[in-house]
Image 1 (cartoon, rainbow, N blue to C red):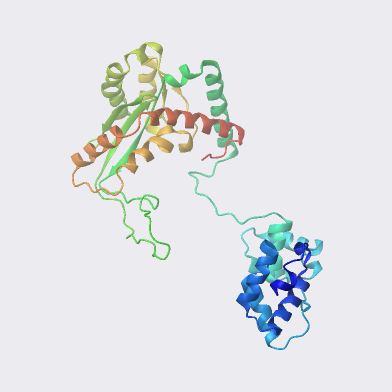
Image 2: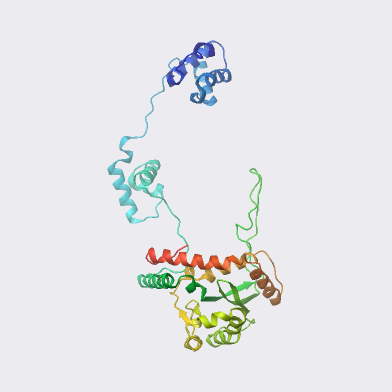
Length: 362
């Protein structure tokens, strides 16, 4: 066969039917599928059919088929994705956007494949899973988030890095005696044919210690472990601000007290109590208001605590002191640039919130 067509200067002009006929002729000459495919590749190069296709043709010829034209196929009806069917799918979706293709198919008397094509190709829809959010925000709460974001950005545009450099932010978090690794942390390199590693689903340890942590762009200023059994109320929080945080600022950031502190925490009842506000006002620390239900705009929640706990997950601690020491080590091991990154990420999240109507940001 190669000798018959190899000298042709227009190999790219061979049609599918031409190749089928040449294949039939080669079978009559006694050549097998591998030999025919090799000849076709020699002549047609990248335009040659696959070895699987050649084998299918050789089998058809060997079984006595004479006609090398494709057999007629019914194909998909022209009206499968027509306006009438598109309207049917839209009406079905208007009742319940969670319906499956099978359910829509039953309602509209369309095939499941046609329903899927209408949804994806004609209506440009994609089924998306719900994402977990801290709270279903009301319009008023979204507006509050937008106002906070715009005020924050207005201050930053005026004062630039001097504004961010004066902010101290803080919050409380539980540190457990045992916190399971995340799925990402437990991932390991394996061969393609190896099964996925298995883990027993475990709950967090019963022993836990509450930590109150305050930091700025330069790092952690105070990491205070709350004694077990202590209730964190307004009076206790006030005492920590007076007896722990202010001395820590004076020791680690002496210039910050003179330049003026911008203090940020969320609006938990303990933080917004009159006693706490009076202490902050007495220190002349300007309080940056925080919108309700907004952990995505709190640097402790979206950055510091997750980063810190990455170092603690998968470790088991037997005593309260073990937890406290491990937490200190985890904070010490954080990259110093991590705190600057936290504030940059905070700024970007606030920009997104201001532009997206107050919805949660990631």
